[in-house]
Amino acid sequence: MRSHLAAILSRSIKPVQTVGSRTADGNVTIDIDGRKISIGVLERKRMWGEGGCDPITQAEYTALNCWAEGDMKPYVDATCCPTFILATAGAWLTILGCVIVGNAIEMVVQPLEDIMWLGEATPYEDTHVYNVARVFNALRRSLDELEAYYRGVTLPPSTSSPTPPSPTAAVSFPYPTMYTHDDAEVRFKYVQRLQDSASSVAFLAETEDKTSKLVVKFVDRYGADAHRLLANAGYAPALHYFGSIDGRTPATTPDVMKSGLYIGPVRMVVMEYVEGATLHDAVHDREDIPANAKQETARALSILHNAGFVFGDLRSPNVMLSKSGLKLIDFDWAGKEGVATYPRRLSKGIPWAKGVADFAPMRKAHDLEMLDKVFLV
Image (cartoon, rainbow, N blue to C red):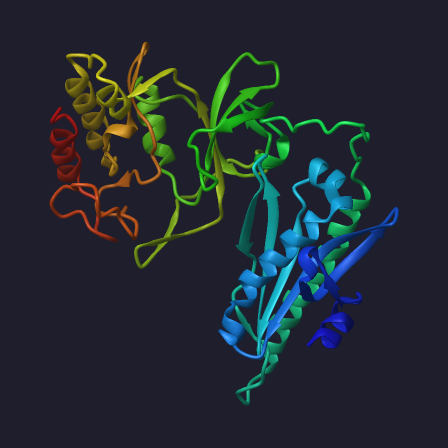
């Protein structure tokens, strides 16, 4: 397998020892000023489960060990250490990408390709061979681009005493930092995750001129029309951008739904940041709840319902109490009644309205029942 992959990728793939004398099955490295930079790691098994360790998990630890080598620190400080992972079991192969983020180092690994069968099993193999070849071609080109990336990195100056990394180091955040609004480009910088979790997809940001705070989130499903409707009525934060993550292409087509699953590209949402507390936090901290909070929430729902929309996720964390008035936030599920459906794997710990279930159509009646549940405080 290693010799075939080396020929396909036009790169040397050699076994390597990492920290603790652990041996990786294969490593694709580039030499920069005497440092061996790992851009690809290979782990292989004769079958899934062999040796009591999944090759994917083993490859993740191998990649982390490669970057833990002492002479890698300048690159760890300057980059998020992007690395390709190839894991094989018999005639099956999968490709993943990994990065290292945060001050307390966290590794983020995500699949870039399904587990792919490399064998031949039917009389009609041309399409399969073509698709496999496309994957390998993409990987070869991507390794070339990754090498160019590392060769272009400017390393921080060496110092006699280590400097602790900034808690807002750019490597901890997504790469999009621009969006278009009213035909103008707006550039921003990330400040922090809105939730203390590596899986959080919502971030607090501010414009480069520091005049405005923003919420930036990344979604594959979003009720932008419902959001705009309530924002225009003053019951939601202003929506500045919803579209592709290049920040230049607003979404003009609705979410694609197949069999209850929303299928589509990841898109970026940029909205106004609203100062205040959620209803959930206000109740938890025993703060005073405005006497008209339920009435205002009902008013916001009526605006949506009269236009044929359903909010779908009316819970206390999605009701914001601010100086400018009550706002609904988180329109990920919002959509047209009877068309939009609830997602899969709904939380079992939430007392949902009657009729709410995985893939069930969202109804206005669900919103109204959740309204009563939310304000049982």
